[in-house]
Image (cartoon, rainbow, N blue to C red; front, side, top):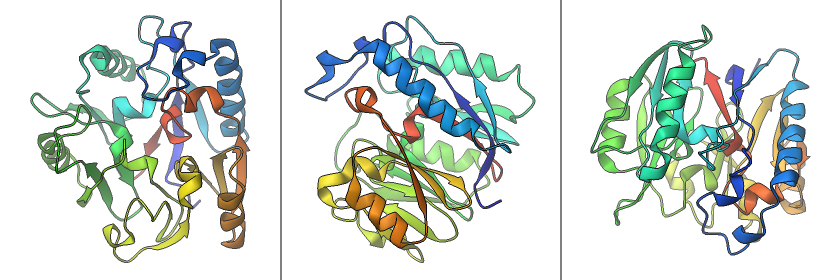
Length: 266
């Protein structure tokens, strides 16, 4: 199988999801009922992969951003690295997930990013040969900082490359597909950040579609409504599967934000 995981965790949105932290101008129009329905459809697509075990964690009513599960940790079959949010109101998500993982044999032992380091999973791009971590070098950020990158590199056996990023998260601009190929919004993140890779390009007016999830056998989950990107994927030999994520777009989240794969190489 050419995907990087056989187990994936998800967490449904809570009733408080409409109070999530977001910079989107439409954040005040979040429809929680619709978000829950969209999340169920998202999980249904994951469950269509018969060889993937989907583990659904309970919603966290007091933590509105907790549906964006990928940010809390980077999970692997031999080790899990619990991140540390720069945003204090989200740090309980790290602790809850660390405790929940103790109940699952599908994941490895837990290590942590410690203060003053901060690390969010949305800044970590895993490939089958190396790992890239985005960091906004020029400015202080409430997300992943330089100390977080250093700690992550010391805790993983994977080769770690730092990427100069000006995006909200690194994964807002790129996604791993298979082999040495990435889906990339190359107008906001240079191809030079990923030497040796080839690219399926996402145009500037469809940047949201750069955040995708490769499901194996050429299937790629992408947000609905981005025809240029889906055409580029088809031309490159992939089968895009569109999911409607309007309510998560309003919360500054996308396809990869909503799940936490358990990577075989970690």
